Every structure is written in structure tokens, then in C-alpha cells.
Length: 294
Ligand SMILES: NC(=O)c1ccc[n+]([C@@H]2O[C@H](COP(=O)([O-])OP(=O)(O)OC[C@H]3O[C@@H](n4cnc5c(N)ncnc54)[C@H](OP(=O)(O)O)[C@@H]3O)[C@@H](O)[C@H]2O)c1
Image 1: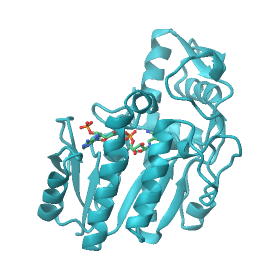
Image 2: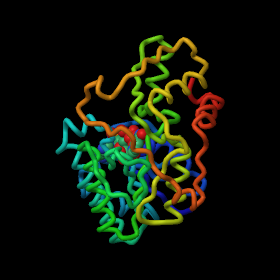
Image 3: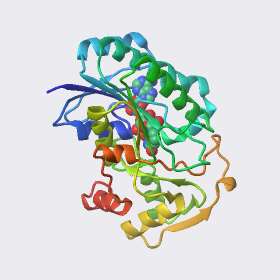
Image 4: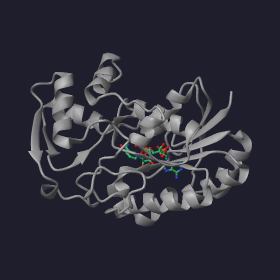
């Protein structure tokens, strides 16, 4: 079987990707601090901000393709730590893309819907980027540099994702479920919209993109929904009728990173390749039916 190297393999998306790719690929993973093992994945501890370590891993593993999901993925952290986050989000991302270009293997960079300012949704792949946060700026800068350095690279801009929690790396729904169960007030924006996608669907879409295309590909869900309405849907699927959901607006909660209001992604290009995300209700029901979240 061909070898796939997934960076950030212990992170939320990387873990979902590593599980989905098994069977089609011999999966190798890179993680930094997380010491957990992933069944079926040959996992190595490496800090990707060390170039010689990246080279050593590529020489030893000799992958047939790389999916780069490692990142400082929290916008608030990036806003407060721009230099530290830039190292992995931009500099080492471009180094890794360059090394893959030099050895002639496909490279997929996981970017984000947050490269847009949220004023003219839904966004297509060729719409101009216009980030409002440092995280978004770093993703946009890395996208340009990756495509410049590796002309056959694929940039997957993913929407907000939800799904099974990787050991030590959850999605945004796990803390929300805890709050629902504990009966605490949950404040959710009515004026922030996304096109969320399950990590299982996103992983399938990213692997499809790896096989079939290059350039920029949007991977998101079918429905545009506010954070508040997503919370209501989650509450209904879980049947936690006592959950205390309080509507609020972006303005009412101060956070370090500015937040765009609506970065809904247009996913026609991915769907033309065969990407078929489920509806939000279907995907949430699947998660709970399989008892992976309780
Ligand atoms: N989650 C979402 O809803 C979402 C939406 C849009 C785009 N994205 C993008 O999707 C990608 C994956 O996100 P995620 O939610 O899975 O993030 P995550 O759970 O925070 O995982 C990040 C991963 O990156 C690794 N990492 C960070 N710095 C590293 C370094 N210097 N060297 C080696 N590994 C390093 C972490 O390893 P350790 O844990 O071992 O430190 C972890 O495995 C990111 O590019 C993110 O920006 C995510």
C-alpha cells in the first residue's frame, strides 16, 4: 500500500483523517506533544518547527503523499501569539510544501474559511481572500506561498468541523455537550453563520481532493446555520431538553481575535468531484447512534 503522512495526526482533524485513510493508505502520523497512540497509525513525535526533523522524517518514511493538518488552530491563541503561531502556520508549512515539491509528491495543506471577512458569502474558491484575524492572515499567506512553491499542491479550505473527539483534541461540540448536561448557560451567536461539516465527511472530501485535483478546494457542509441554531439542533438530537441556550451577538462577547459574521463556503467544485456531505442532522445522529459521544 502507498504511504500517507498526516501531520497533526493527534489533532481533531488529523485523527479523523488518519482513521478514514486506513485501508486505502499505510498511514504515518506526526504529532508534537500528544503522547497517545492511534490504532493502525505509525506515529512519530516531531516538532515541525525544526526543519532538520521534517527532513529526517521524510527521508525515513518516504511517503507517497503528505496531508498537512498540523497548526496552531485557535484564532485567539494566534492573535495573542503572532510570531509563535506564524512559525508553524506559515514558515514550516511552506518548508514542508517545498520539500514535497522537491521530491515530487502530492501535498495537501489544510486551510480555513477564516481567510474571508464574512461580508460577501457564500465564498467560491476564486473569491479574493480578506482575513480579519491574524490566524486568517497566516492561513492566507501560507496558501499563496504553498501554491507558489508546489504548483501541484492542493489547498483544502475547510469550514467549521464537528465530530468524534480525538483523545486530547475535541471539536467545538464536546464542551457544548458538557455544558448542556451540567445545565449551565450557553451563550451562542445568532449573528455568526457557518457551513459546518462533520470531520468524517471533511476527511473523505480531503482524500477525494488528494486523488482528483490541485489548487484550491472548499470543503464544507450543505447548510448555512448560526451558532445558536446549531446549538438548538444539537440539543434536539441529544434530547437534552433542559439545556439552557441563550442567544447573543458577536458584539456582546469580547475575544482577542475579530470574528467574521458569515464565512459560508460554496462547495460545488468539491461536489462535482463526488463529495457528498450529509445533512447536519444526519451527521449528528450518526455520531450519537454509534455511541462515540455519550
Ligand atoms: N477544527 C476546525 O473546526 C477547523 C476549521 C477550519 C480549519 N481548520 C484547520 O484544520 C487543521 C486541523 O485543525 P484541528 O482542529 O485538528 O487542530 P488541533 O486539534 O488543534 O490539532 C493541531 C495538531 O497540530 C499539531 N501541531 C501543532 N504545532 C505543531 C508543531 N510545531 N509540530 C508538530 N505538530 C504540531 C498538534 O500536535 P500536539 O497536539 O501533539 O501538540 C495537533 O496534532 C488546522 O490547519 C486548522 O487550522 C480546523
